[in-house]
Every structure is written in structure tokens, then in C-alpha cells.
Length: 321
Image 1 (cartoon, rainbow, N blue to C red):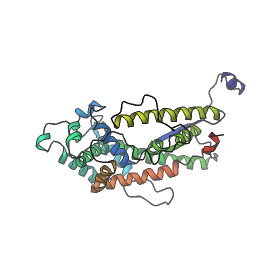
Image 2: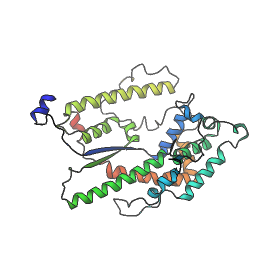
Image 3: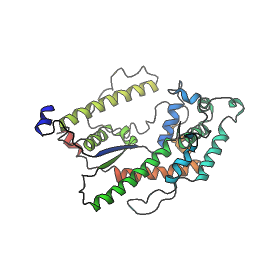
Image 4: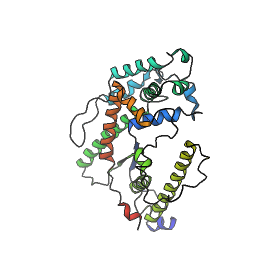
């Protein structure tokens, strides 16, 4: 690589090629259920769920709340880039207040849970109320939680940045592909069911073939998919009461042309406390505020993936040749 670098006349200096950003997003409903399943495991993989109050107001710099930081963006999302229509607010100050009230309604209000931790609530509340409590924490607590609204905020901010850069590029006649900042939006849900395809998109976006040859990319993708399948098999064995993966991914499983859309569509953090993932998502959709807010975030994610996830990656069969 040093010889190649020197042969290109690049030795001793760095070439500025702009900034490339990969934004990983996820369907907010599956994200919320995965979060609940993960933290409600026994034993929990993260001990902070035993010490926090999911309903308390958290402050940044001792005076700013999460609504203070997110509402200016979430109240006025940008127009849909495909239709030009102005979407409604993702959520409002009244929604934050309603979520806080719902949190207080279910936290430490049952006689047997008066002094119990957040983790104990996740373990012993009815799954309907436990997943609501978990999701409210993931939506409204900006320090210990807040990932769902943070994701929505980042989508909007990246979109605003992209539009601004497009206007600047047009003004200065900068051709497509030479932008100073390029963004690729990828779905974590797609990574779960199509690991090979998304690994290829990732590498093609970041590395031109003159930086990373196709053969190198092929090797990286193959290793990634094989490692992913081994880990997935180990998780499923553990969830089924088995003894772990042992490195085998089972008969007939390889890292080539992997499509897990049917067999793994339900793979959202394997260990479940109670109820199927579909039932848990149903509970979220039934709640007037949570269902509406997550539904609007879902629309935002879908638009971002259509608009920012169509990077011109090479055709998949080029990796097979």
C-alpha cells in the first residue's frame, strides 16, 4: 500500500476528500421493543436500570431539559423531499407532559412495587405497562434514555444540512459526487435480515475501488456475514435453552447470498420477558400519544431511508464474480 500510495504521488501528504457520514436508523416500534426485551433480561446486561428513576426530569448543564433541546427541531420537521408536503409536528410540549403523566401512573403505584426499582418494574409489571414505561424512558429521558427522539432529531438535522449543502453546491457549480459532506442512511432492521447487502453498501459508500479493491471488500463482507451468523446462532441456541453456538452455524448455512427476511424477521433481542414482539408493538400502537409519536417517527425514518439510502452501490452480483 505504501508503494501504491507513493506511486500516486501521495506520499508525505494527506488528501482531503470530504466527510462521509453513515446514519444508522431503526423502525421506532421495533427499536422500542428491542430496548424493552434487552433491559428486562435476567440478569440484566446493564445495571443502571436498577438505579434510575425513569420519570424524573433530567437536566443538561443543570438547567436544560430534553424537551428544551429537542422541541425546536421536532415541532417543525422539514417538508417531505419527495412530495413537498409539510408533515405535522413529531410531538408537542403537551405530548411530553402526557408521557410524563403516563410514566408516573405506572411507576411505583402498585402496592407490591412501591419501593421497587425500574428494573423490577420491567420484570414484574404486566408486559403492556412495562413496555410503555420502557418506551417512555427511551423517548423522554435525554441523559439515560431518549434514543428514539434523538434519532428523529438527527434525521431532521442531517436533512437540513443536506439541503443547505445542495444549495451551496448549486451556487458554486460543484458537481454531484464532489460534495464536502455525504450522508448514507442505513436501516438496522435491514442489517439484521440482509447483512451481506448492507455491508456492501457500507463499504462501497466509504471506499472507492482505488482506495479499497473489490477483492478486499469481498473478503471483508464474507468475514462479516460469517461472524454475524455465528453470533446469531449462539443467541438463538441460548434463547432455546441450548449451550451456545460453539462456532457452528448449522447445516447448509454460509455467508453467501444471505437473506434472513423470513427466518429472522422476528429477531428483536432474542430474550423476551413476556408476550410476542407483535403483541408488544400492538400495546405501543394502542396508546394514543406513544402510538402517534412513534408513527410519525416511523414515517420520518421511511422517508430518510428512501431519500438517503439509495446510494448508488454496485450491483450485488459484481461481488459474486
